[in-house]
Image 1 (cartoon, rainbow, N blue to C red):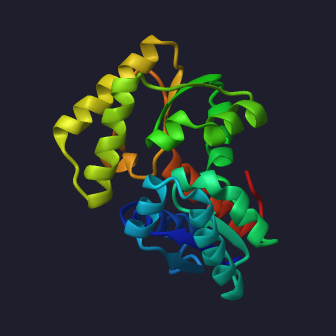
Image 2: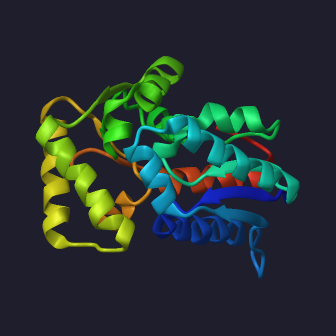
Length: 234
């Protein structure tokens, strides 16, 4: 079994889900008392969020690059960044190490293609929904069209992530807002919905509807298990 290197804490609420899902995945595959070999560098999200707000992405990239180097030194065989938004600085992480980097958008795209979906709605932080680092990877590498919520809806989705979910708060009115946003994306042609923030599953994990949903936390964790046990990347 390979040792996984996790960069977490963004937020720790979803990192805790990663830890559970990866360990459950290893136990389900190997049985008995087996669990995952993991080294974790968990960052202070307040520091990261301030860098995001100040548009200091180069500094954020160096922060995560340093975390990556620490994982490599600790014996990690591959790197898993436990957040969607901070994949904006994935190039800085990849420059910091020769270890395989398991990109969350690639793991998500594999599931989308397997489901036969070509056009998806994307929920996430403003950075993920509005910038090109995530949408372009899906489009250019995987041929998947992306639809994002309207401006008012993007504001609501982003606020709920930072003000509630990252603080461990799950509220029914916010669930209703997300359901409305998802319905609007479907009306605009989305054949599926990406939960493109690792905290969204806390709010909408049991969501059922007319189109499939792609929970990036679960999909990324499953890809990490495949890498640890089989050495394969999405």
